[in-house]
Amino acid sequence: MNMLHEPVELLGEIEEVATNAALCKRLVMAKTKLDRLERDGTCKDLSALSAARVEFALASRALADALIAQELAEEVDLS
Image (cartoon, rainbow, N blue to C red; front, side):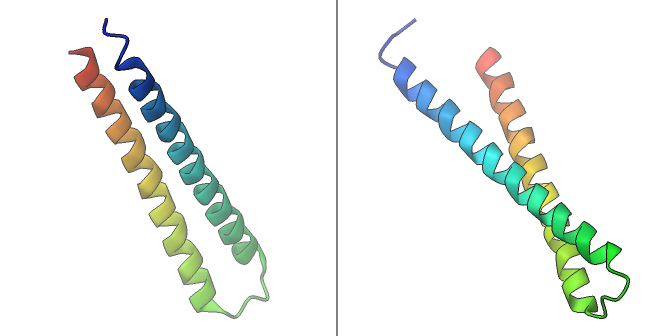
């Protein structure tokens, strides 16, 4: 194995972990807000509830896309 490429690979893994952590945090925050709005029976702001649902969906898709890309990259590296 060429040792010159090892630090670059490690930096890529660190960036990947940081990106996944940020996407996980985004998803958790979106879910928390959505749950809070859905539990609040007095909430009359349907646009806020709709926006929270959209953000949750977008955050879910972003995390899923990142995990799929990571899985595909690992498959390419293995071959």
